[in-house]
Image (cartoon, rainbow, N blue to C red; front, side):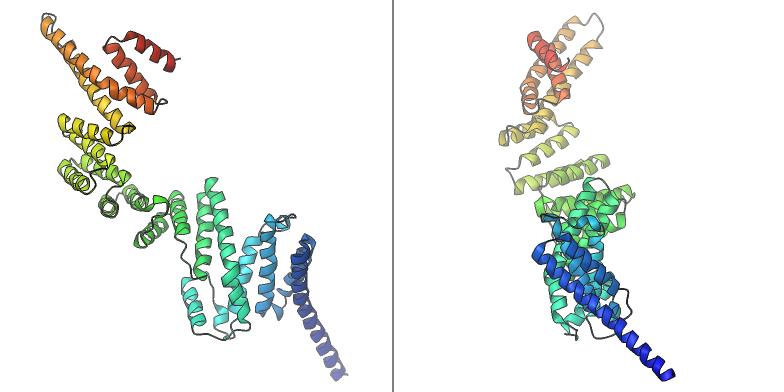
Length: 423
């Protein structure tokens, strides 16, 4: 009797295992049927079968179980561009697809220790690549080759797109996580996606994860990343983080490194000038700009920057000379026109203030100062008019223009400009 029970039990166990094997085969067939028909019902049936197999003690240890599951979810994701989108019946398809392929690749190894790898850990990723390089035995080479060569690049792109969506919605922490997953998956394909690292660094900074941001910015600096001209921004961003942390020496160090790498970048020049001016270190600023102009004498930005330093040093003749040179090189340069016009305007205003402080019996001196002020205001007009022409939406420039017209007794022009901006 006992022998009969054991036989029945063995038969039942065998039938159950075979049933689970059948679920794996069914999942494969349903996926193929979907690729022919593009009907979501085929994917649903396939996922029902494969998810049963992932719960069985035997078939959940098979690489093919997870590989087939990954393929089903991959097609769910790919269906977004098909006539019938299947994404609606599983919002977590991306995560489940990724998890399936990660498990498939490690379970594909025949070595029991390699089957325990966790590909979300850097040290295990290294072991994984070493195992591939050493040609460790696997159940099916095609599984790993297909996942790494064809599937993971697509999944990395999906996480990247998801990160962009979260970033645009200002969900910076979620963006950081998705960009990070995209980076990790690209790494498994043997590719360093520098643009995704930059996105992750920016999202990390905005999410307040300064350490992660600094680490990634530093990595990109070492890789000489400059896609879309963002190389200089790496130095400015990491310098800004250190400044917020109160580490001013580190902040200045990165700006200095940035200036060495990108000597003509306007934003780095301005940032460095702000540091020098705040410290009262104008000689360093001039020395730096003199060298930059010597190396690039056709760069209008450098002349403009040096003009601002001369203005701070109370060397107006040199400042005016540099502003004019910047305008000569680029007539439509708003900042140079604005600063030149503002200099003359402020100089004229100082003469007016000086005249107004005179006693009543100093009429002659009063008139002389008023005359000098008028000459300065007249010199301001061409530059302010040009700045207004370049940027007609700048109300501050328009108000300055109204004042110089008034001070030079061009009342019709003042009235017309006032009517345009002061409605």
